[in-house]
Image (cartoon, rainbow, N blue to C red; front, side, top):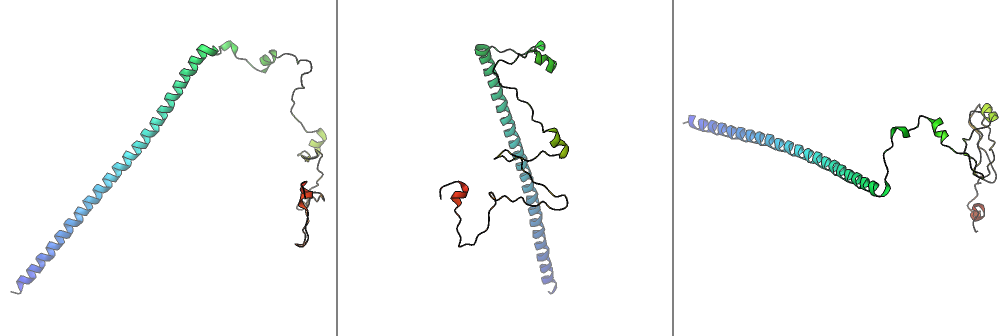
Length: 177
């Protein structure tokens, strides 16, 4: 009788192993199926995005062509513009200059390109700095040996004061005190 309980116990263990193996294989198959469906969903989403982009492009193309047709209709009815022909293009500046007329009496002088004076070009590669307020050149020498020294101007610089002293800011800024 001692053989029967061992045989039943073994059968139970084999049964549980079979159930566990069945459940594991079912879980694996289900996991693969879920991943397959996820992949199909991602592909469908990509196709949806691509189709939306294509739809937007086609809508833009349609609106552009509709606008071109509208402009062509307006041109025929209202403006009468025609495309330029080959003989209307110019070879260069000389041909363009032939179309020019002399300046009328009292017309303003033509705008010319600004250039630094010759002595400024020789002395420095940069022109002198000019104050935007006064229009005069700012004389600030930069020493070659060390860091530049700050330019101190009495009317523009500020001084530190003790907290007990008050400074009328309105008079400095040009406002009311």
